[in-house]
Length: 281
Image 1 (cartoon, rainbow, N blue to C red):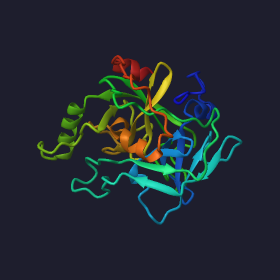
Image 2: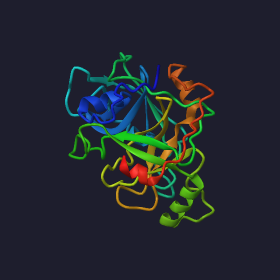
Image 3: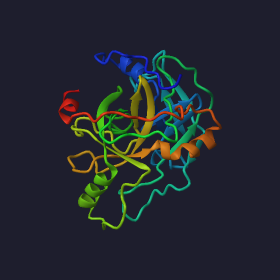
């Protein structure tokens, strides 16, 4: 079944344990250089942010099952991704600069299907009626800033961070405050998710396509992809994620039923978590 984490002990933080805990994590590489995180949704399909793969003159590939992203291991595979499918409504250049990037989603089709194991496993896609409640606690995973030393990202092993889902209208107000964009222009819309963490500087994951995953009854669902934000410093405005459920039909039409959607009854009903408890995680 999709969305199965293969490491249940949260105290284990070694590279192998982190790779088993998040087996859908994929390094998207351009000409052999890590450029973004991606998420495995089927044996030949990886979902990532469109802004990561818009260069026509690059050769794209993915690295999967990797405890350490800069090293090959018995569980690691490098697979070419010859087909890149961008959402046609995505625009890399916008009048409002970095604010309000919409339709930031792309699919990579792999050269051959992956064999699943404890280190390589697809996450579940949310159903069309999947809903994330304000105040829900979810998890973002990644390797930090891409090309930190020219080739590899900030961290060599997968890092995770708990984030709290925020109300979109309140988030929209914050972005108008920090960006000076006229209030008549909607910045954060219904196809986006706003999620805040308490220590952004310790693990800066913005603008690199990382998955926002939420757990329901031990099954993990891909709820969002990191799309844009104010940067890695301190800011009132949190990172913005593309809402995957809003693009379900777009995904299904292109993967031809090979991705694994959540059951139609899936509704994410998570109780708000006190920020003090989040800080202790």
